[in-house]
Image 1 (cartoon, rainbow over the protein chains, first blue to last red):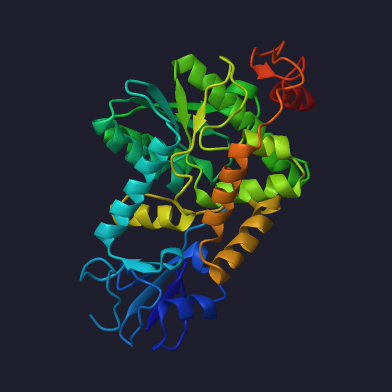
Image 2 (image 1 turned 60 degrees about the vertical axis):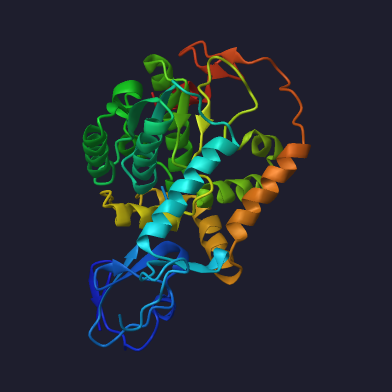
Length: 62
Length: 307
């Protein structure tokens, strides 16, 4: 998969779910959204080798 | 659709999992769900009356931008007059882009928009306040100035209610923080419509997003194409709220529904716990005329300290 985390390229193996990806990145599910091929995806969505994945942190302080 | 998850209510692809509700939702059902909760909260706390002039605290961040759109949509069925109020704290690199978004979004929806800045009203931007000060001072200055200026602006504009974008995360954090700081009276003043102190000097504040988790507000903004800047306030990392936020999010992941349960427990306690009347009658600040407990209000005291 092609993975971007907050605009930065990262490497990760495919075949995992969005929730597992967030956990592997040590992020909180409560603070970010995973987009698969441009669309927000549910936690259980499996990520394939050809998928383009963006993880966006949306919860900040202030 | 390879590896996709379906909406619990139709056959469309799900865009979100709501663990606390044990369901997945597609874009349509999720957006309807958010809009319904917003309207239900407004009704639950009798937040608004037909024909009122309602101010919307609009920073241009995700919460207030979503609030602006939802209030605009509500004003079609419940006739309301709206005015968006932006406070520019003067934080370089952080506030200018969101002030621009606020202006654009208000214009797009045809809502009157007013901007007030710390620098023009108090003579100090947050950046100048913070020069040479310990980082932990930021939120106490910013919070006092912002509340003071919003109230002042509302009265100037003749606003009857001020809607602010506090979400479920904000309110559950506040409940916990008041308990942790042993401030039960402050806690009892908190709620959907803020304040046990009724005074013509205070414009009542309403929190129509208090039953919507912060993440869902961000997702709603993305799905509705509401422009947002996801960035952190450069002074925010110093606040105790950050620690509470992280711990509460960890709890929510392990025990979905925790934030809702904290809010609901608090609202139940509030029903039976009657706060005592204020010890002293409310005074008005000798310098600015805003309501206060002492001769000089907290805001004017801080300005004096800076002068």
